[in-house]
Image (cartoon, rainbow, N blue to C red; front, side, top):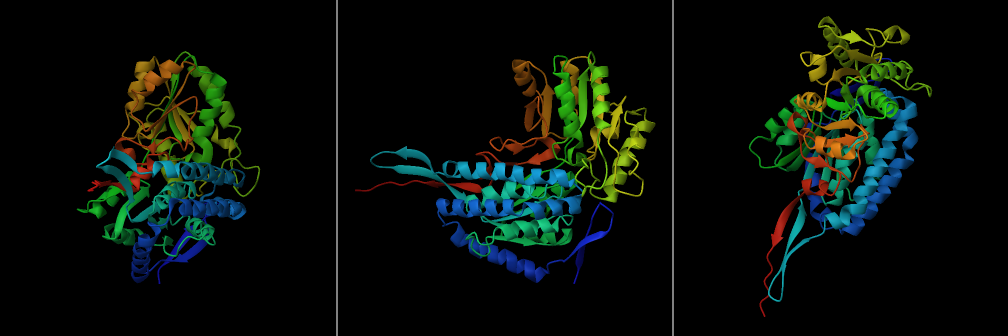
Length: 462
């Protein structure tokens, strides 16, 4: 029997062990999911909503355990782990609220002879590969609308967060959800290839690296099914000369450092009008150096370790390489004595004198580090913001709403913020462009990802 081990970044010890599902067990899971789909898709939308609402209530009731597991499995400060369930509830309640209208038949021709309409038919078995960085939210962004639409779910969570899949499953108990509609498996990448290739899988959702997304597309092969992919990011911000400087600094520091920078839409590069550049970096340095990096299980810690030692070493290598190319560290790392080369604790860092010839400004870092560059005008800011293989979110910091709207249309991104960053409005589509991926979650458009149009051409003969 193969065993999956989860190493906690808090002290690099083995935190969890789980047996990996056998091929026979996985085959049974997929078959059960396919069989349960036949009855679940016929369940009324009202009954589905009741079940999902009970699930939401149950998962919220598990908050103490969910928070503890997120803290120990990924190293997020315990004081911040409750935000995960607050975000989960906001998004899930919204999707429930709009489900009936979003899934309603679309009327077409209707007269004495014809009553034609488009029915939104569920796809079938959805295979979800969920990431570790926001283990509840990212999973349920798919689970909730997919189930509301009448699909069944098989989820494989990251090997870093297996308990989160188990807690989601636990929250479905005593809700009335039929057996087989939601199932999870613990398995390795090689077995995931077989699941994705299985003809019983109707749709695949993956959140992770660009390379991982490419592998998913390869495993689908010649099958005509769609995928939802949220992949890499290097999200930019432009601080215009008319910005509220204190507001911009405070929010951008948080956008870069929250969850130790391990956010899909975290701020990784900032472009500041040269007229306010010095004041901006002075303020950014002051706030960043106030963080307390330490044991995330302690309530007064607000910056924890990154998820694993290999990630920590990658972040350190990016910073060191940029420094050798002429960049400067703005933050005195000696203020964060817990950070050592042999652990997962990374001192927050702000790099200046950077440019786009550096890997640090072009490749995803996924850590508590950000690069800041001065720009002479909006044209230079736009060119630099778009000079990236990624496009998940981008933000502008200005008091001019009309300018922001016009500027945003020129930026290659899935979501454009004004005076905000690192947040999801569940009424808006969460999507990306370029190497960030395809498909979307949340909003009324999410349901279109998990249904197919079936046209009914109904002629009455009297």
